Image (cartoon, rainbow, N blue to C red):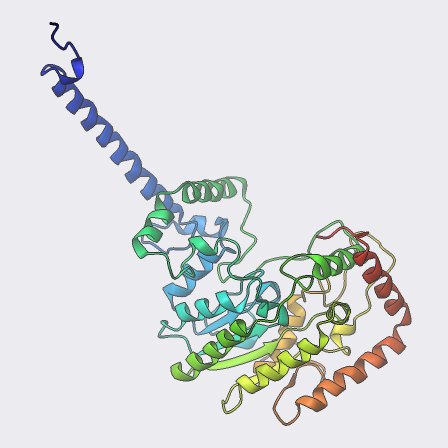
Length: 406
C-alpha cells in the first residue's frame, strides 16, 4: 500500500501557500487602493470627492451622462434646476444672464422621458438651496415605449440599485477606470469636454459637413421611422402620472415650477400630423393644462407655425450652411433658448421675444390657442409654398425608405 505524496497537503508546503496568499492579498489590496485613488482623483463621474483634481474637471468625459448629472444634482447647491430632453440640454444655457447670477444646473437628458425626469427631480428636491425648477417638455417625452436610456442603470436615477453597489461600481469597475483614462487622455491632448460643468451641451453646429437640407431630411425621416420616436409612439398615462407627480412634489416643496412646451421647427409639427398623432398632441396639451389646474404654476406653449419656428429651411443643399435659430427640425439654438427664458422669467437680454412666441395656456384660452395654431399653419403654407412641396416630398421619400436617418 502506497502513501500520499501530494505536496499540497504536506506540512512543508503550507507556510509557502500562506506566504503566496499573503503576497497575493497584499498586491491585490494595493492595486485596489491605487485604482480607487486614481479614479477618485480624476473623478470622471462628478462625485465631488476631496481627492478630485480641479485641473482635470474641464476634461471629464462623462459630463453629459446620466451618472454625472444625477451625481451633480444630488450634491446640491443649485438654486435653479433645468429639466427636459436634449432640446433643453442643447438650447438652455445655465449661465444665461437672465438668471441674474443664480446658481443653475442643466439636468436635462438626451432621449429622456418623464420616467427619468421625475427621478431627477426626486434627487434635486433634497437640495435645501433649490427654489425654482424649469421643466421643458414635448409630446415625445410621454412615450410609453421608452423608460431609462443611456447609462440609466449605472446612475443614481436607478432607484433599485443599492448605495454600496453603486459606490463600488463608480470606483472599482472597468467603466470607471476607462472613464478616468479617457479623461486623462483628454487632458493630455487638450480636448475639453463637450459639456460645461453645469450640464450644458457646448456646440456651435450639429453634424458638421451636412447641408441644412440634408440634415433636416435625415432627422425628419428618423423621427418618423425610428423606434422610440413617432414610428412606434404610444402616449402613456403612466408618463402623465409622473408629470403630475412633479407638480405635486413642487407644490409640497414650495418650489416655483415653470413648465414650457418646447418649440420645434414647423417641419417637425408636420411630421406629428403625417404620423397621425396631431389629435393626441392637442389632447396632451389639454392634459398638461388640467394637471396644472388649481396651482400657481404657469404653462407656456412655444409650438407655433409663426415667428421663429417658421424660419425657412435653406433648400440649396450647400454643406456647412446654417440657420439662425435651428440646429435641425427638433433642436433649437441657445439664442432661441434665450428668448424662451425671456418669455418665462424676463431678465436682461439684447432683445425681447416676439409677442406671439410662447403664450400661456390656461383652461380658459386653450381652445382659442389651438385654433390660433391652425390659422398660423394656413398662413405658413400660403407664405412658403416651396417649403410645403419640399416637405411633402421628404415625407413620401421617408416612408419609402429612401432617406438615410441620423
